[in-house]
Amino acid sequence: MPTTTTRPRRPRGLRLLAGSLASALAVLVGVTAAGPALGDDLDDQKAALESQQAQKDQQRADAEAALEGLSTQLQQVAAELLAVQQQLPAAQAALTAAETALAGYEREAALIADRLQDAQDQESSISATIDTDSARADEIRGQIGRMAREAYQGGPGLSGLSIVVGAETVEDFTEQYGLATAAQRAQSQVLDELAAIEATNRNSQARLTAVRERITELKAEADAKVAQAEEARQEAADRKAEVEDLIAQQTAKQQQIASQKAAAQAEVDKIDAEAASIRSQIDRIAAEQRARAAAAGQAPPAPSGSVGTGALFGNPTSINPIHVTSEYGMRLHPILGYYRLHAGIDLRTYCGTPIYAAKEGTVQWARWRNGFGNQVMVDHGFVDGNSLMTSYNHMTSFVVGAGQQVSRGQLLGYSGNTGTSAACHLHFEVYVNGATTNPRPLLGL
Image (tube, rainbow, N blue to C red):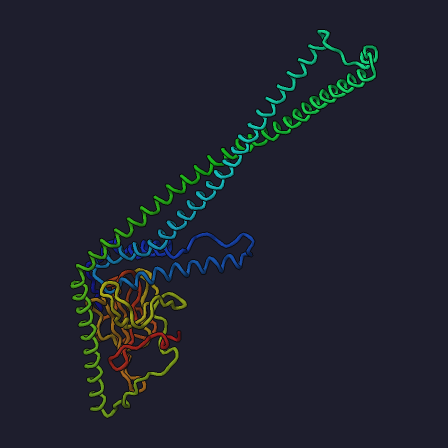
């Protein structure tokens, strides 16, 4: 009867770290939940939403992959650091936007202030002109009043009849007529000047009214811009404080992680030692199988190093089609800062979902392996002269045991988050002659 190996489960808070981290990542890279333009048809809207969801899913997977291989404590610190680092670009962009908006409002306020000053200068100039013209008009009116009083009081007359009657000689007539003509011309000029001044004043008053209305508008506009600039200034200050806080958090987390590098290296060394032990066991098993086959006169051909191409394996997950969240190959360690081999591919599963045998074979072991968590190793025998095995890692539990024969598609156990894993998924490895190889082509992907 197969047994199920269990180990203490990670705290729920840590199991949720990847989800929280992915949300932070989504904010930082600018992925929003807003839908496409209203004018798009339903198919375009659906495609856009699916693309957004795919981006979010990949961000989640990238976050999980970055944290895989660390202890619970180191995962916690690394997750917090990664979240802070991913928030910084958006916070810095928000600060830049706030500072740009503030500069724009300040420029607009300065332009309005210049226009207001011009309008106020015009008001002063027009008012001075009106005051000068009004004083001159008052002076002219005084002259006209004096002339009227003199005429009323019987002052020397210069009418045509008095000139003719009063003239004693031709010379006297000519002189008095000249004086009368000059006086009339002076009176006419005074009246014309007064009329011109009054017309100019009416025009100046109209301009003054218009300028004062414009000053009122500009003052209101200036007040609004000052308020907008002040609001933008506060926004910029808030965003600057946010960026400074994130930078301080980043520095603190980096210092915390730097102090734990030795522990991280020890964990990596332990996992590498476990991986080397697995490869050694696989080599020993293959050698023993070859020896037994040779003793029975059924030795397989010499290893070719290749097990062919195409879909040699079936889908080991319940997700159809198969979805790869992290590829086989070199991966940057988030704490130690160097590249190391990610010796399998991560396939999307959900916590507690079925894991199936990718090909018929014999279970070599189903037990806890350091770093790999609950692991099932299935031996598929020799293919083209090469020993072929597959491992299924981070499982919550398994339902098979060592020595059990399994068929392709048979239930092996259930996916999980055991070992140094950051979230529920299947870490699937393929061994050819004891060395890992990229499983993707053998899954037909």
